[in-house]
Image (tube, rainbow, N blue to C red; front, side):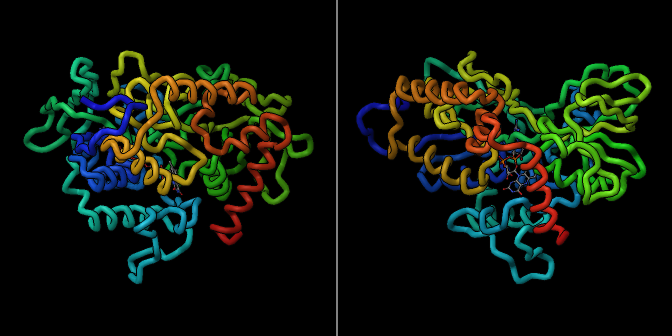
Length: 425
Ligand SMILES: Cc1cc2nc3c(=O)[nH]c(=O)nc-3n(C[C@H](O)[C@H](O)[C@H](O)COP(=O)(O)OP(=O)(O)OC[C@H]3O[C@@H](n4cnc5c(N)ncnc54)[C@H](O)[C@@H]3O)c2cc1C
């Protein structure tokens, strides 16, 4: 039996741990757990390591990503993507992401996506992580075996002679590293069912080709939205960006571009193709491109209601990692956003490994729950919506909510920063 959190120190032990996903989070978690002396099985439904960084030109059958029976594509990368974080902040602590003296590699400080995948492949080879990974094996169910304080994992083979074969196995602990940039969130737009244009989510954006000479409405403020709007503006007839908040004077045509306009959010859309914005401006558009983010999604996880996802809040979680009632037998790596992902994954997984082996002690279940509730109250005090729970850029959100900082200023200053740094604009 696993020790309950908050109790007196226990002997160091080794656990049998399942890691779900072999993206950056799962890879470093596997390494840290093995270093800590645990036996590790990594389940990966794809045929290689790298997760998000395995670029594919394929897109889903439903471009907006809402059809539940669509063929799912994991990665949301677009062809031209370069990192938005410099490489020195994207390496693991003892395996820096340094430029390689190899003509096939990308030495830039903000390299293209292929270079990140190659770094993760190098890391996997260096630490022999692939020997822990079961490729093309999807976890379809993770169920609590209450009486034994263990987990039953059902996995399914996705290829080969054993395709479709399901296997049940018991583990002491499960670490969820399944990523959270695959299941699109879309904006609700009144009238959209009768609107004749096309819709797409950035999850299915690969290059600007299909936007040639189109009138595009792009919704969103994320880093992807900056990149994509810059790229689409190069080929589209017009691009109209709908932003949640704007200050007077920033509406309308943007001075640095011939074909970029800024609007407040969409009020509704009509059967004649018009898109009506909240300030009364109207555009006849061909395409609405949702750069509106993603949902946390754990279709395999059955915790008897202990862990839920509510308006993109995964909870209750102590420090975004441990559900107090199930700690440390269940944990999550990589949930926070507006973070520096790779170093964060490494630190989270070191903590999980140490807690599972009894080298570190968690507070009691009650103390962890109290900490979570205090955190939720502080978000409420600042009027921060639940969907920002895992946003580590707290300060920005608080400033935005208090009216001291404007999202559109933020949008365009970042846009400018990216254009200058990454495209030499
Ligand atoms: C467009 C875009 C740009 C980004 N740019 C940057 C950047 O410049 N710098 C940066 O640091 N970060 C960036 N990120 C964030 C990036 O997602 C993280 O850096 C990191 O790659 C996430 O790793 P992960 O392991 O958590 O998830 P993922 O990389 O998504 O890996 C999850 C893995 O889990 C597997 N999986 C899922 N469900 C199951 C299941 N049921 N059974 C078995 N396997 C499963 C998937 O196949 C996948 O391999 C970007 C993200 C996006 C979408």
